[in-house]
Image (cartoon, rainbow, N blue to C red; front, side):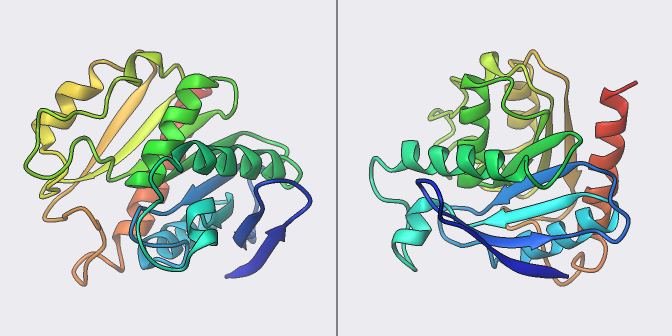
Length: 220
């Protein structure tokens, strides 16, 4: 269950939905969407609900480019503003949780989250990246990994084995460049969208449970 959330006391505005767990573990996570969607995407809603079920307070939000227009991809040159939106959302979430705080998103949103954290390693305690867009489809040489060696924050990747943005072997090779603790959670039969009729009832809970265990392992 989630409630509409808005904070317009700073720039850019933070708008989305807040998931409050029944049995809170004190930790929180900010999640955002890909280039073609918004925070109402089925995947984000399902993952956010599942994370709340295991105790996380979750804020799923629209990036600044989506607040500026309802449809269409990010504006050219807007990535910096989108990262500022994520930075603000993290700051806002610190008023809602007293434990660890995580950041993540699907595809473009996850990529921007990872770039932001590579530049600000103390911003959050970890990343949850859904379908990281390693390269454009059919363009395997155009890798989006320049910032990977600067990732000092633990990263949990969720990857569909049929994702056109990265083969599993490509992901495994790319992740070797990350010095921080990281884990690749593979989803059999899934593409870039991850969620399907076959796994809709099980995948969100599997991801949430595995991410929760990943977080616990980091504190041992």
